[in-house]
Length: 428
Image 1 (cartoon, rainbow, N blue to C red):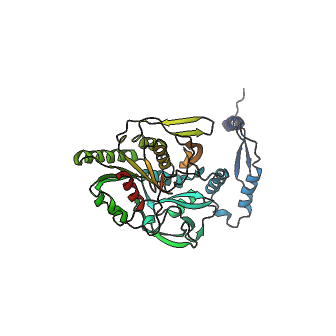
Image 2 (cartoon, rainbow, N blue to C red):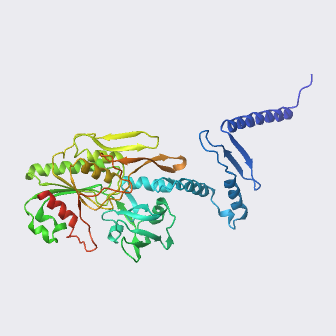
Image 3 (spheres, helix red, strand yellow):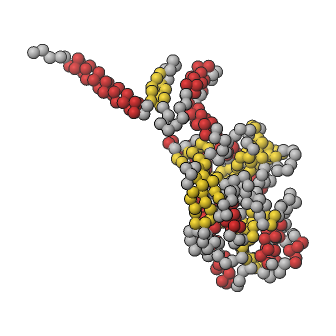
């Protein structure tokens, strides 16, 4: 009986293994309803069919354009396929027409996380979209943006002489942020102004303190000392001041420390006339943070309701026993107060727990659910809308103050008319 030579056996083994491998790949592609092809320029393209519940879409135009870019673009060798994919995904998400539903490539996703953590390098301005343009929701206190004169409601028309028309928020953030010590040139249009101005701002490390507080006699509050009407107030009365700058990673912990300190000072120095809770220029943050903070002042009930994309409704209730349930309260808001800040102000207004002083808030009343994607990318999808305890929506409307007090350009460090009105309300 003759036997096959070893080389022939090896050949058949290799062929058999290849057939098994090809069969496995074919089965997998079949299970995923995917097809594989090779383009004329030797690039492999894998096409996967849409899920069963999705509307059928012809992707042939997408791949046609993809191939034409590599075939005809003058610098085809410099094309970055990863950026092309990210760009395609960004465009798909942006087509929803919702400025808060966004795709974030890895770097931008990392920036957003650092922002909520409270430390990053940049100019310190919270950005949004309005009428398709990049707008400043609020400059963060003590940052280069605030020092340069950036204000809530400012439109950023250009960044380093590049027009921002059509930009997403993540694009604007990536262009404006940068290494400490470097500068960025912004072409700004102030609200109610006719002529844009150029501002060159030097970037810095932004350390965002979540909470600031003090307890003072009226006569010691320098922020209102330049307002004539303050002279009519009882200068010996003591008030507490608590400013929440954002709802970030450490806000709840910082808040508890500040409240404990205020209560300790009250026990040492006697009864306080009341508390001014400052939410001006607070761009928001975590939803659970808004429930935590509002629960400090409200005994029971719904803080906010979330109407979800699947038709369900979720109520967020007071989740703790507050320490400031009885203290007289005035809340300061302005057009830089957004998102979670609006939830808190709106809930305190609806329960008549506080007098709201200042300007109508920004009007961001939608819920974004962050989802982590492979490679460090992220997707923020608007999955619901917020409703205040009385059922009112915040979206595009904002929270209107009980007492409207606007600040003009003449406001100085000693003429905070909104703070003065808040203290006046407490002392009545």
